[in-house]
Image 1: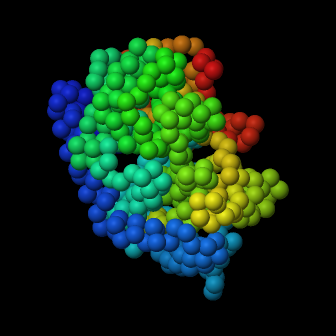
Image 2 (image 1 turned 90 degrees about the vertical axis):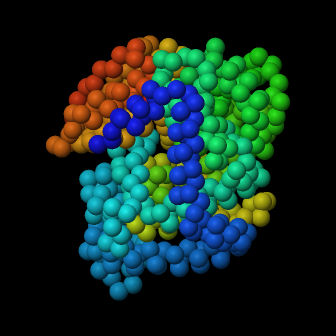
Length: 453
């Protein structure tokens, strides 16, 4: 069970001390992310970035053989698959609930769980899931992130503005500054929960003062800033080398508004906390699937599993050796192709992505997008599924599907998280239901917004 104490201690501290806490935490995270294998693996990725598609396929084949052999030998969930020469097709499809219900069965015996990093994800479906990764996997993941940021001529230590799900101050504290500074990485973190129209000039003034080389974060939060800039004919005193978006679907409209306001390209990224896929846009706008991170297959509407086409995305990790998820139903629909891009890369490409549409919950001008709402659901213990519905201003209904081991205290934490994002005035009604049914397209919607369309 997650403790409230560290966050309460932070939120009750003065701003100068909060900045110090953010920087201390940033220093520790910097060492964990960019030490060990990070540098050598980043060099490897850069050296192999432009290899031909056939070479990428051969490399994937080699990595997959190693992943499968290790999984069958060391992971309890796969040890019943006895085959002299196991293939990917020997593995059944794996869904989120199977992993959530039997987490420890998917952890490799080569690792001590106490030495692994536990990641919690609610995802767009809100079905809580815990995933373990090793220190090396984390470092290599950040090597992929830097390879992505190479497209924006950005390096660690360049100034960066971040609009993500961090709770930087109490939602009812509507006084600036709405940002905190991580001195180690020269990163300015902005609150996504205080972006009311009246507060946006403060955000823009600080961006003009800070002059970040790159802006990253939730598309909707960055869009709010961009829309205000255009609507008020404001002029920025800087031009970023790029805008990095992730965690929510990026619509063409939002992309266009952001690019016009900031006068630079938007680079979108697609991934998952389960460490099964990493895809990102190059300077030509192509969403390249990183061949050494994972393999993506497509489950078509006819029940066939193919390497390209349209359908449900099935992912197999090539990176997370501590908890290898093989043929995992990631929960998104999309279109996969294999292409030679004008940027010089030859990879499988995520041509279209359907799902993870980012609805928002709104209270008194504060907005929490889907990716942020997922944080409140991450630590619900004994919950099979969750959904939040807004039918009237100032109030939400939270539907929970309980399991036998449900912990009522985790409900209190969820309510505390939601009000921390959206204000104490938010009315929250919790309903326990037998099931939460999918939409017509088969996708579960975590956030249903019926007031603010």
